[in-house]
Amino acid sequence: MRSEKFTFPNAQGEQLAATLDWPLGKPTAFALLAHCFTCGQDNLAAKRIAERLTIHGIAVLRFDFTGLGSSEGEFANTHFSSNIEDLVAAADHLRAAHGPASILIGHSLGGAAVLAAAHRIPEARAVVTIGAPYDPGHVTGLFKEHVDTIREQGELEVKLVGRPFTIKKAFLDDIAAAKLDSHIAGLRKALLVFHAPTDSFVGIDNASHIFLAAKHPKSFVSLDKADHLLTKKDDAVYVADVIAAWAERYLDKPEVMTEAEVEAGLVLVRETHGGKFQQEILTGPHRMLADEPEKLGGLNSGPGPYDFLLAGLGACTSMTIRLYAEFKKIPLTDVSVRLSHGKIHSKDCEDCDTKVSMVDHIERIITLEGPLDDGQRQKLMEIADKCPVHKTLESQVDIHTEERRVASS
Image 1 (tube, rainbow, N blue to C red):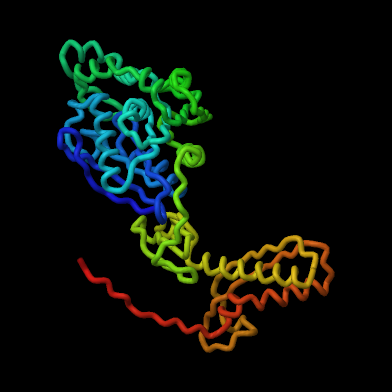
Image 2 (cartoon, rainbow, N blue to C red; image 1 turned 120 degrees about the horizontal axis):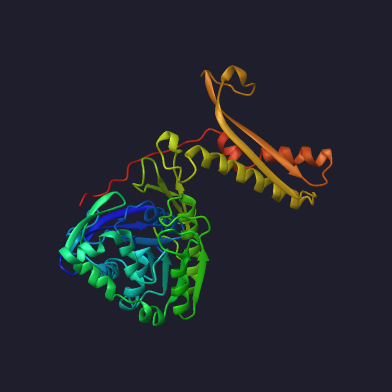
C-alpha cells in the first residue's frame, strides 16, 4: 500500500488534511471513508479498513473533517451540515484528481453523514454504514448532561473521549433538524449496514431503522462481539473484506490490463514508501508485496526476499514432479515441498567444494502422496533435483547490474 498525503479546500476555502491509500496496480474502484464523531482520519478503524481495502484493489480517500486532526478551521463552528459539505468537497476533489468515488463508507456519525450526502455524489454506487445512528441527534447523548447549559449559554467546552471540544447551540440546532428518512428512502444506491448487537454507544435499533427505511438492494451484517469503535484489528479487517466482496456486485468491473512497463518474463521491484522495507513486485498482470517481519522493523505485509527465493524453488520442484508423474502415469495424488534457509559450516557440507567457512544451506523436504511403489518414489525424488530453479541455484550465476538514470524534474 502506498499512501499519499495532501489537502483540499472545503466550502469555506479552509484546507482539509487527507490521505489517499493506493492499492498495487490500477485501482478497481475509489472509496470515500468518513470517520466517527471527533475521531479523525488516522483512528485505528479508518486506517485498518483503508489498508485492507487496498489489498482488494480499492483506493481509499480518508480525511479529517473541519477543525479535526490536521485540517484547518474551528471544530466549534462545525455541525452535521458542515460534515456533509466536507464529504461533498472530498468527493469533488477525488473526482477531479483521480476518479469518482463509487463506494461511500461512514463510521458512526460519519455513517449518517454519508447517507445524507450520497444523493450529491451521483457516481457512488454503494453506500456502507458502520455503527451509524438513524437520528444524527443521537450524538448529543455523549454530552447529554451539558445540553441545557449549552442552550442557555450558547456554547460550552465538554470532554469527549478525554479531549476538550467546544459545542455551540448552533450545533444542537443543526443536528436536531437533520432527518435521514427521505435520504435513506430515496438513496437509489446499494446499501450495506454493519452494526454490533452489543454496541453500547449506538444501539442496534438504529441499524433496524436504517435497514427498514431503505429500499432494496440492501444488506445487513452483524458485527458479533465488536465494540463501537472497532478497536480490535480483526473486526476492522472483517468489515473491509465484506465490503470488498459485497461491493463487487454493484461496481463496473475494470478491464484486465497488463502494466506496459512490466512485460511478461520481466520483474519490476520498487519501493512503496510504506514502512521501512516494503516493496511492490510487478510482473505482467501480477502484483505482490515483499517486506520484513515486524521484529526486524518491517510491517510484515508480505514475504521476505529469502521467502520468495524458497518459494521459487519449492514451486518449481512441485511442478516438475507433477509434470513427470503425469507423463509417466505415476499415481501421484499430491505433492508438497517444505523449505528453510540458513548457513552452515562448509566442513559440514559433503558436496561443497569451497574455501569459505560458511555456505548457504537450503533444507528441502518433499512429501509424496498416493499408491506409489519404492521405485516410483525414488524416481520422483531424482526428478526433483532436475527442476530448472534447482539447477540455476546450483550453477554459477552471472548477475549483471547497471544503473538506469532518471532525469530529475
